[in-house]
Length: 157
Image (cartoon, rainbow, N blue to C red; front, side, top):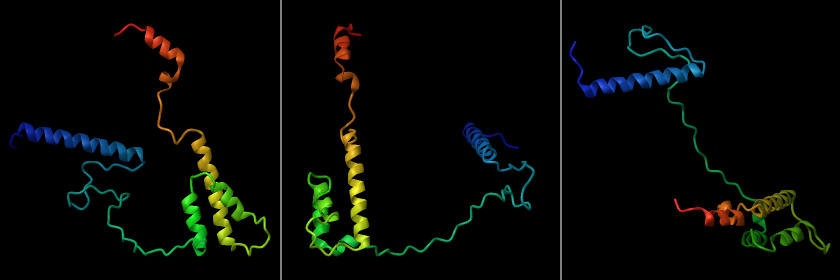
Protein backbone atom coordinates (compact mmCIF):
# COMPACT_ATOMS: atom_id res chain seq x y z
CA UNK A 1 0.00 0.00 0.00
CA UNK A 2 1.28 3.42 -0.90
CA UNK A 3 1.73 6.18 1.65
CA UNK A 4 -0.92 8.96 1.60
CA UNK A 5 0.11 12.52 1.02
CA UNK A 6 -0.60 14.94 3.89
CA UNK A 7 -3.47 16.51 1.88
CA UNK A 8 -5.00 13.08 1.21
CA UNK A 9 -4.58 12.06 4.86
CA UNK A 10 -6.41 15.26 5.90
CA UNK A 11 -9.19 14.50 3.44
CA UNK A 12 -9.55 10.96 4.82
CA UNK A 13 -9.66 12.31 8.39
CA UNK A 14 -12.36 14.84 7.45
CA UNK A 15 -14.37 12.10 5.72
CA UNK A 16 -14.11 9.84 8.77
CA UNK A 17 -15.39 12.66 10.99
CA UNK A 18 -18.30 13.29 8.61
CA UNK A 19 -19.18 9.59 8.59
CA UNK A 20 -19.08 9.48 12.40
CA UNK A 21 -21.36 12.52 12.55
CA UNK A 22 -23.76 10.87 10.10
CA UNK A 23 -23.80 7.70 12.18
CA UNK A 24 -24.59 9.72 15.33
CA UNK A 25 -27.42 11.43 13.48
CA UNK A 26 -28.85 8.12 12.30
CA UNK A 27 -28.65 6.61 15.78
CA UNK A 28 -30.33 9.72 17.23
CA UNK A 29 -33.26 9.15 14.89
CA UNK A 30 -33.48 5.45 15.69
CA UNK A 31 -32.05 4.16 12.42
CA UNK A 32 -29.77 1.15 12.80
CA UNK A 33 -26.25 1.69 11.50
CA UNK A 34 -24.92 -1.40 9.68
CA UNK A 35 -21.44 -2.71 10.45
CA UNK A 36 -18.58 -1.89 8.10
CA UNK A 37 -18.75 -5.48 6.89
CA UNK A 38 -22.40 -5.28 5.90
CA UNK A 39 -22.33 -4.34 2.24
CA UNK A 40 -25.32 -4.93 0.04
CA UNK A 41 -24.58 -7.68 -2.43
CA UNK A 42 -20.96 -6.73 -2.88
CA UNK A 43 -21.97 -3.51 -4.63
CA UNK A 44 -19.82 -1.48 -2.27
CA UNK A 45 -22.70 0.55 -0.83
CA UNK A 46 -24.03 0.38 2.70
CA UNK A 47 -27.55 -0.98 3.02
CA UNK A 48 -29.94 1.49 4.72
CA UNK A 49 -33.40 0.22 3.82
CA UNK A 50 -34.98 2.78 6.16
CA UNK A 51 -33.67 5.64 4.03
CA UNK A 52 -35.25 6.18 0.65
CA UNK A 53 -33.30 8.62 -1.49
CA UNK A 54 -35.08 7.76 -4.71
CA UNK A 55 -36.58 10.59 -6.70
CA UNK A 56 -40.18 11.13 -5.85
CA UNK A 57 -42.56 11.94 -8.67
CA UNK A 58 -43.11 15.67 -8.95
CA UNK A 59 -46.63 16.90 -8.43
CA UNK A 60 -48.07 18.79 -11.34
CA UNK A 61 -48.49 22.46 -10.49
CA UNK A 62 -51.82 23.83 -11.57
CA UNK A 63 -52.88 27.42 -11.60
CA UNK A 64 -55.47 28.26 -8.99
CA UNK A 65 -58.08 30.71 -10.13
CA UNK A 66 -59.21 32.04 -6.77
CA UNK A 67 -61.31 35.12 -6.59
CA UNK A 68 -62.47 37.00 -3.55
CA UNK A 69 -66.20 37.47 -3.15
CA UNK A 70 -65.55 41.16 -2.47
CA UNK A 71 -64.04 41.53 -5.94
CA UNK A 72 -67.61 41.47 -7.26
CA UNK A 73 -67.99 44.87 -5.61
CA UNK A 74 -65.15 46.75 -7.32
CA UNK A 75 -65.70 50.12 -5.66
CA UNK A 76 -65.75 48.51 -2.20
CA UNK A 77 -62.65 46.41 -2.89
CA UNK A 78 -60.81 49.50 -4.14
CA UNK A 79 -61.81 51.55 -1.08
CA UNK A 80 -60.82 48.76 1.31
CA UNK A 81 -57.44 48.53 -0.40
CA UNK A 82 -56.90 52.29 -0.20
CA UNK A 83 -57.96 52.56 3.46
CA UNK A 84 -56.16 49.47 4.81
CA UNK A 85 -53.99 50.49 7.75
CA UNK A 86 -55.22 54.08 7.74
CA UNK A 87 -57.60 56.08 9.89
CA UNK A 88 -61.18 55.52 8.85
CA UNK A 89 -60.78 51.87 7.85
CA UNK A 90 -62.61 50.51 10.89
CA UNK A 91 -65.48 52.96 10.46
CA UNK A 92 -65.83 52.16 6.76
CA UNK A 93 -65.84 48.42 7.44
CA UNK A 94 -68.39 48.86 10.25
CA UNK A 95 -70.72 50.75 7.87
CA UNK A 96 -70.43 47.90 5.37
CA UNK A 97 -71.12 45.19 7.93
CA UNK A 98 -74.02 46.93 9.71
CA UNK A 99 -76.59 48.62 7.50
CA UNK A 100 -77.86 51.65 9.39
CA UNK A 101 -80.03 52.94 6.56
CA UNK A 102 -82.04 49.77 6.02
CA UNK A 103 -82.20 50.28 2.26
CA UNK A 104 -79.37 48.04 1.13
CA UNK A 105 -79.74 44.62 -0.42
CA UNK A 106 -76.84 43.19 1.58
CA UNK A 107 -73.84 41.06 0.76
CA UNK A 108 -73.61 37.39 -0.07
CA UNK A 109 -72.57 35.15 2.80
CA UNK A 110 -69.07 34.75 1.28
CA UNK A 111 -68.59 38.52 1.00
CA UNK A 112 -69.83 39.03 4.57
CA UNK A 113 -67.39 36.38 5.86
CA UNK A 114 -64.56 38.21 4.07
CA UNK A 115 -65.61 41.52 5.59
CA UNK A 116 -65.66 39.98 9.06
CA UNK A 117 -62.24 38.39 8.45
CA UNK A 118 -60.86 41.77 7.40
CA UNK A 119 -62.29 43.31 10.56
CA UNK A 120 -60.57 40.66 12.72
CA UNK A 121 -57.28 41.14 10.85
CA UNK A 122 -57.48 44.91 11.25
CA UNK A 123 -58.09 44.57 15.01
CA UNK A 124 -55.17 42.15 15.35
CA UNK A 125 -52.94 44.46 13.31
CA UNK A 126 -53.93 47.45 15.42
CA UNK A 127 -53.25 45.49 18.63
CA UNK A 128 -49.78 44.48 17.44
CA UNK A 129 -48.90 47.98 16.33
CA UNK A 130 -50.31 49.36 19.57
CA UNK A 131 -47.80 47.19 21.42
CA UNK A 132 -44.99 48.78 19.46
CA UNK A 133 -44.29 46.19 16.79
CA UNK A 134 -44.29 48.94 14.17
CA UNK A 135 -41.44 50.82 15.81
CA UNK A 136 -37.76 50.05 15.29
CA UNK A 137 -35.99 48.30 18.16
CA UNK A 138 -34.77 50.71 20.78
CA UNK A 139 -32.05 50.75 23.37
CA UNK A 140 -33.91 50.75 26.69
CA UNK A 141 -30.74 51.67 28.58
CA UNK A 142 -30.50 54.97 26.73
CA UNK A 143 -34.10 55.82 27.60
CA UNK A 144 -33.72 55.36 31.35
CA UNK A 145 -32.69 58.57 33.14
CA UNK A 146 -30.84 56.59 35.82
CA UNK A 147 -28.79 54.78 33.19
CA UNK A 148 -27.89 58.11 31.60
CA UNK A 149 -26.76 59.56 34.93
CA UNK A 150 -24.64 56.50 35.71
CA UNK A 151 -23.07 56.44 32.26
CA UNK A 152 -22.23 60.13 32.57
CA UNK A 153 -20.49 59.50 35.94
CA UNK A 154 -18.70 56.38 34.76
CA UNK A 155 -14.96 56.82 34.22
CA UNK A 156 -13.82 56.52 30.63
CA UNK A 157 -12.44 53.04 29.98
